[in-house]
Amino acid sequence: MAPKKSANLPDEVEEIKKSLDFLSAEIKTVVAQQNKIMELMGEIQSLKLQNIEKDNKITFLENRRSITVSLSDSGFVGALAKCRKTVGHFKHSPANTAELQVEQGALGQKEEPLIQDVPTRWNSTLEMVKRLIRNQAAIKATLDQQQHKLVMLTPPEWDNIQRLETLLEPCR
Image 1 (tube, rainbow, N blue to C red):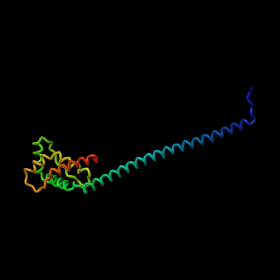
Image 2: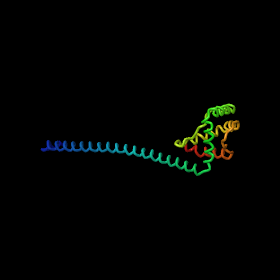
Image 3: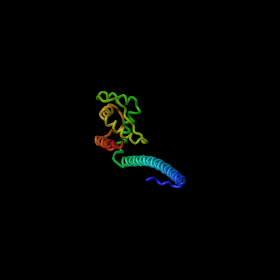
Image 4: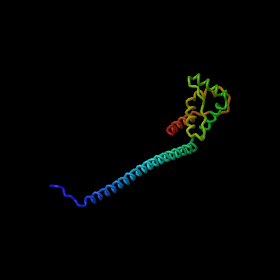
């Protein structure tokens, strides 16, 4: 059977071309919309990451505030004040620092300075406490040889300071 010939063949071809042009325009529109959707999804992902960072910062600040309030409301305040005085005794006197280093060497410890905590650096209290605990024997030996007006940490206060180190370590 032979295919039928249409008398309107040029019109049909023209109609098919118009349909193809319309479909081509529709495809371009869909592709542009898909690109815009992908761009918006990227922006949403970026905003989600920014939100996570802000949430983490808020949590960090809340935790820091909780620790600060807890420390001020706890029995650590007096022990920390004595720690700061002890560190200041050595930090403000090169002679005292030299005597501490001699004791550290005599005890086979690493010769390291004590660390003074800073209110604006919340983790510096942990570093001060860790350094004091590590050098407890050398500090006691040095202060036993000196005439000073420091009020020394009592054994229960040393225990409290060690507990404080345990409490603060996860927050570092």
